[in-house]
Image 1 (cartoon, rainbow, N blue to C red):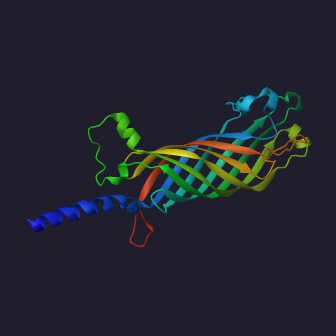
Image 2 (tube, rainbow, N blue to C red):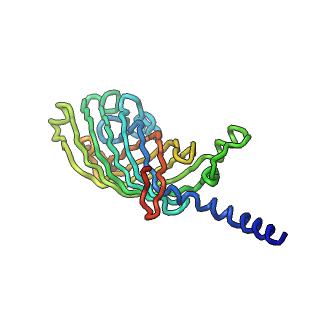
Image 3 (cartoon, one colour):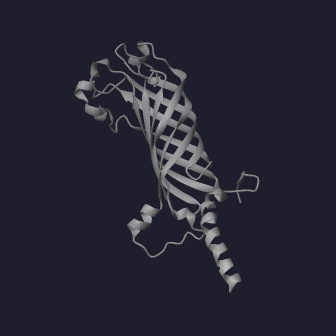
Amino acid sequence: MKRSILVLLIICLAAPLSHSQLWKMRRWEATAGVGPSFFFGDIGGFTPTKNILGLKDMNYRQTRFDINGNVKYRITRTVNARVSLTYALFHASDARGSNEERNMEATTSIFEPAIMGEYYFIKNYSENSYLFIRRKESFIFHLLKSLDFYAFGGIGGAAFWVNGNDELVSHGMKSSGFTPVIPAGLGATLIYSPNLNFGVEVGGRYTFTDYLDGYSSQYSKANDVYYFLNLTLTYKLKTGPNGLPRFR
């Protein structure tokens, strides 16, 4: 009888500890993302007096796309280190803005490597289950229990190449360059299975240049910025005894 009680106590004490360590079995994650890109430079757009909160500058004619890949390492259950590579296209045009008579237009492509940290301020409960069993519960309750919310930030750089129209070239277009960038943003992930997550992420980049569109106006008071809105797919890799990811 005493032996049975002792075994039961050991199991009860060990279960929460083992559950809290399950994330260590999949420390490495590979994430791919794709979505629209939004650029705010000196070409195009409306003057602040005609553009409350900058909403007029966000339109489908100027929207392009980005695609990125990330490798993440879980330092703790709520903190990740992340290496990111992004390719993106931007478009800027004076058409239908406050400077239509200027008639400048530019298409910019960038390649952005970055190192970031992620902090999960709301963490899911689903990954604490060995079998990932979906019990009989409402869809909303299961959805809320399987969501993560996080903030991220870091440092990176962007190499850029500009293709402009004749009007932009005649004003001394800067055709290429490199700038440091500071990325920051918010994201959410849905824990679909022990191996797969689906998510959405919105992030902005502050740059240290005013020439991402190849042009800087004498009236410009700030450097260029850009934003990404990405749908993400994450695959979790098993961690080997040496701490490196296992691919099988």
